[in-house]
Image (tube, rainbow, N blue to C red):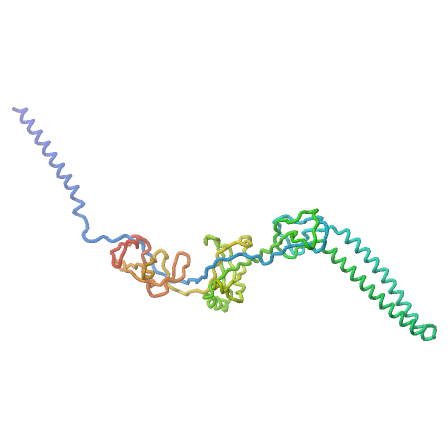
Length: 375
């Protein structure tokens, strides 16, 4: 009998333990449901405060880099190209020797011309001395007036011959100077077009070299004629800044200023050309390179700015959401110029100090409940 009681007592303990485990499981399952909050849950969003700052107004256009000067160096005398004194791509200074032409023939001609000049000059000097003597002898009746007049004409004729000889000498000296070819500008030499040993002539269309003056660099771009008024107003206040960006509009290549406007509008495109000068561009602007030019036409002083990603576009215009307590308020705004990642608001759609929603706005409507998780 003692063994039976102990067995029944063990079964009772097992049943009691199982009952306690069931109660604990029910409490764990039903516990979280009892703490579920009632009412709608706010959409998590990120908000940024509205600020005031100066915003530049830019006119964007596609421009082309043009050199200040590009000179095709050709020969001014005929002859054999004796030497080339430059390396391709070399920077040269104005007046630097870049090529030489064989000048032996011209030197011989110059020596001959100088000899002729010396001979004719001696004949002229003798004729002048004779004229002086004839004028002294006419007073005593030793020579006639006709002899004196003839000698005067002879002196004038010889003087003309000497002047022609001097001109011939000077011409050959100039031709001889052309045999030494010098750079007319400061710049960079391009690829060599003619090798030493070739015969070059004044009628050839192939230059010996092309020298491009790259500093300062110029950028020419076209702007709509509707922007002429703003550009003229900006130029009246002082130098107008122009920024040159790369093709992706990410890298700033150089800073310059407007040099001049074209004097007429292109009637086929409705644009006018603008030339900008970049003094400190270095090697970042290359001739015929395409760049994105940004002309700073004006500056909006202390206007409200919001992150560009906060602005959405709809059928009724641009709009954004403003944090109003625990709800989002939809407001229509008039977007203005963009400066970096900020956009100016040109109307009274937002005020400084308010917070606009930047992330999570795509799930919102007007008066939607929100929860700001990252101010």
